[in-house]
Length: 500
Image (tube, rainbow, N blue to C red; front, side, top):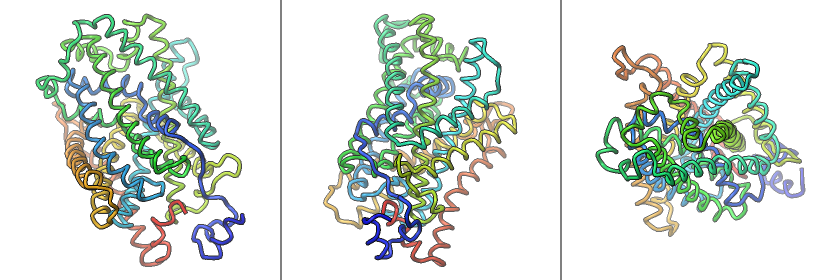
């Protein structure tokens, strides 16, 4: 125990009592740029443009998908206002867990924590499936050994585990390099398309009301919002940020604006590349290879190879970023006495939540092993199903956080002003509740639960996933209520000891 820890232990610090001699406090000097790199990398820009965008075009509103990215960014900006306000007045990491707890009580705060763990774990394993499949096909195309997809997924889990075990600044540098490369190639491709005038000339057709409302705009919006998953995790890195009162809000706004502008611009350029009237047919011919085919068409075969390589690195950056987010959620929950104390330990050399990182690595490996055992398709089932769970869960969490912001500032006089404490959060809440209803209505289609005519139905698979999503927050509420009855001190410290 250090000299700084001794007075806390003498005063009955609950964390000192739980893990005497073990460091539990994260620290660092992450700036706005490093945090933005990590959360934008979690959004996996090239993965969204190369994977999510074509599916949104095919199943959603076709050439109108670029407008969905813009609408999604606007909704999330209102959400970000309340999130940033809370980060200024509640100096603790934990994001959803912390803010919902302060605004709406410990049971709902703990429910949000478990739902967040489900969200980030499912999106991580979903991308591991996609990454394994992409590596498998790439290696075979290069006349390499034809190994099962899960072998590549497990290898990537091991590599991510090594980086996650070490200091987070190493991860941020890796993510920064990969992010610059993938964003750079998409911008180059977009500029070349614009420079050539596209297939039928440049126009604003994707933003015209008739185009926006064509097909199934609700599905288009659902896929667009899925592309933003991860930007809200800026608050998780509070203890590792320099000047967090300024750094966290700035990083949050920059992340959502940068992601929104990038997606809107790049998707518009891709629509122009094939023409608004032809884009759906082009995507339908080869949905998975759309972005590579576009790169070959406009940048040549070398450009196609570069895009394919960077798609792989984009997927890797995504899983690395989500690994860091999940390990810090577990670390925060451990410090709040709701997960085992060992998960809260911090490495003496790397200053990382190393045990939490190891647990997350094992969790991902076990899940991928189970998927392989049950012979699930890595893209059509692993990626699609678990992306669907993550998308619905994250929107519910955001809506709950907006409500928590409104409740917290209604009873806590801070002088923050009505815009940040009431108006923007209310607008964000309305938008997110509407999106939640759209996703629930279209969820069966997302996971392929349809009848013989292709109509979405609430079948056994949909019900099973809904039950699983409901189970996680219920566990949180039950655990909080049990602690309130049996361990009052632990219950009182659920929120207050998160970053003690």
